[in-house]
Amino acid sequence: MSFTAPIQTPGLTLDPQWFRRSVFYEVMVRSFVDSNGDGAGDIAGLSSKLDYLQWLGIDALWMPPFFQSPLRDGGYDISDYKAILPEFGTLDEFRDLVTKAHERNMRIVIDMVINHTSDAHEWFQQSREDPEGPYGDFYTWSDTDEKYENIRIIFVDTEESNWTFDPVRRQYFFHRFFSHQPDLNYENPKVHEAIYDVIRHWLDLGVDGIRLDAIPYLYQSEDGNGEGEPATHEFVKKLRAMVDEEYPGRIMIAEANQWPREVAAFFGTDDEPECHMAFDFPVMPRIFYSLRSQSAAELTRILSETTDVPDSAGWGVFLRNHDELTLEMVSEEYRQAMYGWYAYDPRMRSNIGIRRRLAPLLDNSRAELELAHALLFALKGSPFLYYGDEIGMGDNIWLNDRDASRTPMQWTPDRNAGFSTADPGKLYLPVVQSLVYNYTLVNVESQLAQSRSLLHWIRNVIHVRKAHPTFGLGEMEVLPTDHDSVLSFVRSYAGSGTSFGDSAEDILCVFSFAHNPASVTVVAPRFAGRKLFDLFGGGEFPAFDDEGRVQLTLGTQAFFWLHVGGPNVTPTLPISTVDGE
Ligand code: NOJ
Image 1 (tube, rainbow, N blue to C red):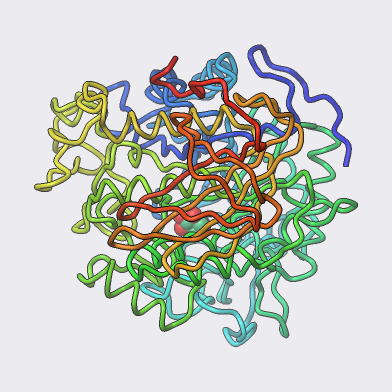
Image 2: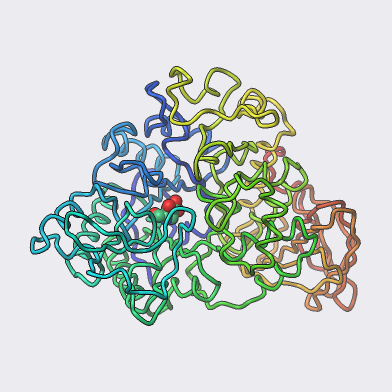
């Protein structure tokens, strides 16, 4: 696949593979910083914190919808694709954000919710009122609610059917999500044109990529399950061709909550590419399973499954995001175990998942938070952090639905956690005030002041990752071990100049999920006789023996990132950590 040079904005480096090297940060505009004291975060507030994000080592922001919306689904219910919700700011403020981000070589990816709109969208209003009019076929209407019976209901907590009767048009309309989110009808070519127009609008404003929300669900068929139907893939290919042709260098990310092979289908092929990236939904719940079961077997299995991914495409890996921790991609047995460990209070559950943040899920265990992040930053794919998880923010399960983990960012111990100057009662959601995660204890300011805080630790790991292009661009091979609690893989990249001076690089990554110290033998015959060096401090470890075996001892829930050097290598130390800057 060839890339033409992207149109350059000041500050941005020319790098067609930027998304594979990037550390992403998901930031909900509403939740980050309120610049005008109205109680809700806004775009100007986000712009004011770009220095913080740059300091942390963030290369790209993912911004969930900030468009005109009744906000009945966190903005994923759009009523005007081209307008910004006034409480979030103006188009000029958005332009300013893009410019300021690009000046810092930081990219911006925005959400494109193209499967459905809000029922408040003008298209839907016209469709229901005037079936013969220009928008009459913009949605999927039917006289019966018995079509597409193979299609599952996603929001099982609130919806009983994927069809809702509209009293105005006196027909049923189809919806995959809430009944106020009618699905657009992709059988209608005019819908394609309208969506292209919206996407061009935002790409023209300089955004660097789009996350395609709910992408498997565009088309339905009587026989299929409506998830990744052939016609959906055809549409995504066509969209990719348009993006490559008109906006080279910009990217498309698939949100497809499916099994590995089905998600991988959204990468397309070298000849007919679809998305540049896809979120790795199958891996994420298995990380949480390993942490409690102390078994790495299932994680090892899923990571070993080979899926055809074009060379220039990449996974997006994540621990948490603005949705529930979905348990759709695990077996019923695993799901029940996970509910038992992580959602022992029914209020913690939502649909088929768990509506909690990372730190409370891990019971605020520093060892588990470090282990989970070390894995996130070492896996094949680009890591996506969720705002606030870098300081171990808590959640509020007394709030509705997924709002539990969308509370205001905690900046300081002051009023409203430094998020807003509004009367506390006016905030869009209250700040977290629980015993353990209270904003007076958990906030950016106090963690900046403690050199051993989670925030500093995460920043350091991000910078070590960035010093080794292997993590972003290298291959991954899972290695056998003799310990059920230990996951081991090697990341390899031919051609990176590293702190060790080699032209190619291999990094051995070992993670122990055991709740006690563990001794493990890792086997990699191709590394027979090679030396190992810690990637953080440079310390030398036992070498692989002549058969390519090495015995390592790990503390409770500990990990190693080890450079595999040649037999005669002496590294030039220290490796580039932030502390050593
Ligand atoms: C996926 C989004 O991540 C989620 O927040 C939303 O509710 C659904 N799509 C429907 O748009």
